Image (cartoon, rainbow, N blue to C red; front, side):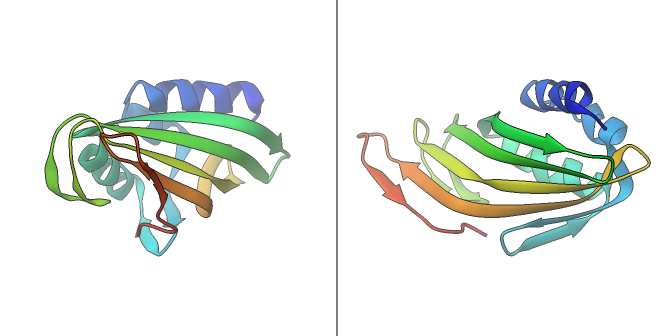
Amino acid sequence: MNLKRFADYIRRFNARDPGAFEDYLAPDVAVQNGTLRYTGVEAMKAHYARIWSGMKETLDPRRVVCDADTLAVEMHTHFEVLKNDPDSLFGPVVQGETFDYTGIIMYRIRDGRFADIQVAYLDFVHTDVQGRRRSLGIPH
């Protein structure tokens, strides 16, 4: 893994390309996102299929450091709700609302792929359709 490959992963993720998971994640990738945990590429694809079915998610890496075994990124992620969903991962959501994640994501690298992903939260902010912002803490 290097910065150029990571940039490609981010580009493909933002394009909602589930093939990026197959190309950049180890088959047995372990993911911890707050209190949410899952294992494997298929679980990752299912998780994001659920999010992408009703939201546009855009990753914006701010700072990235990488060596042979680890990549760490200060990440900002913007979620735009595209349709009402009473049962989203974030609870009931309404079209036009947004969510903004700021935090650190640590990727452990094995054989050039992400084998372990840990997502730590600095803030998670909900903005309602009237423009009112409220910090939610950890959503999962």
